[in-house]
Amino acid sequence: MKPMIYALIAGLLGNASALADDRPTFTIHTGHFVKNDTGLTGPRDLLLLRNSAEFEKVFGLVTMKFSNARKMNPVEAKAFGTHAAVAVVTTAKAIITYTKATAIVDGDVLRVGYTAETGTPGEAEFASPLILLVPIGTWKRVEFVEDGQAVGTAK
Image 1: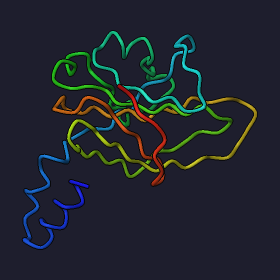
Image 2 (image 1 turned 135 degrees about the vertical axis):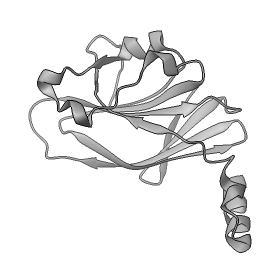
Image 3 (image 1 turned 30 degrees about the vertical axis):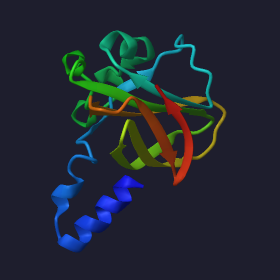
C-alpha cells in the first residue's frame, strides 16, 4: 500500500515531506444540519459533493439562536471549485460524535478515516454529519474508513 511505504521511508529517512502529497490538508466544518428532504436513506450515507448547489441540497446552516457562533465553521460557497465536500451522515437514535479524522490520497482514491462515538440513545432520531473540505486533486472517488473498518465509497 503506497501510503504505508511512504510512511516507512519517511520514518527511516526522517523526512516527513515524503508524506506531503499523500496527506491533503483538509478542514472539518461544523454549523450545518441535515435537511429533512434530502432523500438520504441512512443509517449511514457517504457523500462527495463537488459544488455548492449539491451541498445546499443536503445541508442547511444552523442559526445562532441554536448554537454558539464561535464554535461554528460553516462551509463557504466560494470554496467549491478548488475543494470538494466529503461527508458522512449517520442517522440513529443518538448523536454521533466524530473524532480523529484523516485523509490520505492513494492513486485515484481519497481515503477518509475517522472514529465515531455513539452518544446516549433516546427516542428522537438524529442525523449527525461529519463534513470535511478537501482540495480537489488526482483522486476520483472517496473510500470511508470508520473505526478502522471500510464502510463504503462515494464517487
